[in-house]
Image 1 (cartoon, rainbow, N blue to C red):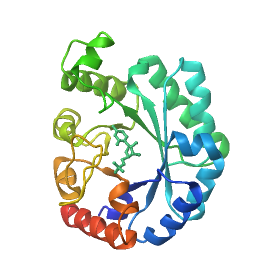
Image 2 (image 1 turned 45 degrees about the horizontal axis):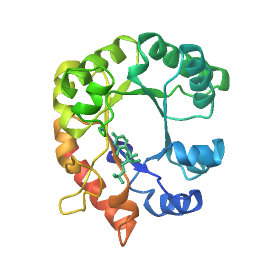
Image 3 (image 1 turned 135 degrees about the horizontal axis):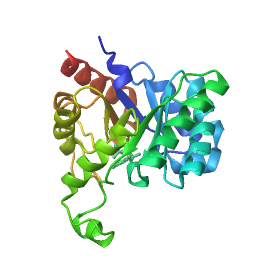
Length: 240
Ligand code: C5P
């Protein structure tokens, strides 16, 4: 049976010391913490160490996108830190994705740690049809997402980052073969903030999401531990 704790990734979009305190407060309900670019640019591997010290798995959200050799080297260095999830941009193409998976495996092997699941970001949810057209994509976003999802799977990526709106179609397309990770999660009644498309934790799980990224609904709550427990219990209920 899936432990709901491992299906919730807390987005640490906070100063590191605050993130560390928060993780200690909610650790009973949340098993993964997401380190984004700003935290990693500021603190580097220490951000990863802090999370591991708090007994949570690390989701290193670096969204790598470069020539294959550079991505392979970066993925190897990242996975040697002992992270559970590592993100790359699917738009970097097949060779880059294959290089990311290779780097993730070789870096983990050299450091004698488990290799991370490489999660490919399909189309950024911040991009609309006009943005896609601006980079030469005239297909609707959903078509581009499916194209990149298939490419990422063929290249050996272990999962995808997608919006809740795309989960059901991707699950139907891919079966259970890939981890589907979704941000934009809001418990019923919570403020959407700048997220344009949101859904509840239970709905995301029922649509087929495996890993829910949740930030503000937990760290901006009056009592983050209470908020995290409620989300955990909702996810556990949906997982059955
Ligand atoms: O606070 P909130 O729950 O909206 O945080 C969502 C997290 O997921 C943030 O770290 C944000 O950068 C990230 N994210 C997102 N949408 C994407 C990809 C990542 O909100 N498409």
